[in-house]
Length: 374
Image (cartoon, rainbow, N blue to C red; front, side, top):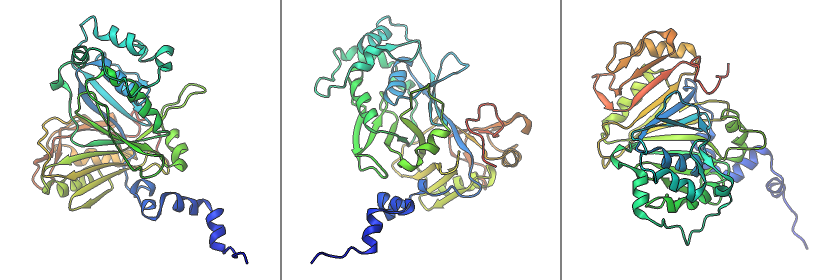
């Protein structure tokens, strides 16, 4: 006699949308912070991260081709901007590529159009060959990278959500021979979708990126607040979902949490070893900046710049007034829509607890990448 199927069995075979998410991601993963609504008081969005790099060409290959990030316009000649959803990765190029063989060799090898910043048809037709990916001349590869001391290191890592993780795997494999080291250094079990996640490091081995596929039901929300591609095209990298910043002193965590909640009017979550600052560019898109404690973290004197936008003009005005006159503050007026802080400081002592430079902007600032919901 055949077995009678229960209602629970039919619910598994034809689940509701909410049930499907629970089945797909699992009960534990369903509680992941980036699948939950951002709390009240969240800031709007991480606008950009700025770092210094030695040379322009390897930066264009790594970010523009490897991650497939579209170039954004910059008013500065020595700056490169790449858009990962609403968040830009900006790079100050520290030295000129004066050697005649640096750019031409790259353009010849992989078909990079130096002016347009992307690969030619010939370059796109080349497929990665993991068995023959070594550069022909390691010395040329090193010259192409420039002075390693000019590559600024972020004390932590960046988490990126992509549409298809196979794309960065292919592209980084295809440019492996242009560099002196592997760019894909590890894989991990993905949290939400796809066959695997990738651990990527930049050409100077200074910065790391955790790359995995975004939850499929969030793809439309993520794409809605990113740059608009040309007709018939899509961008594979959808968002910078989390920026991690590691601090050495355990006492810094509480001070950083207080700094953001008191002076920047931001929603934060604090544990003894971490502080999470919340952002929400659009509904269902929950972005975070996470500070974590690690005693093994070497001291960092110049980790770069982070720009963040407040959700409302009122939130910006309160933050401006709270920070005015405090250590590291620079700004003219609330009407200007921007002020800067030289570091995170302890609200109790005024002492620096993290040397991270901040640019704080109003949602009315002309560079704001998204419009806040009412």
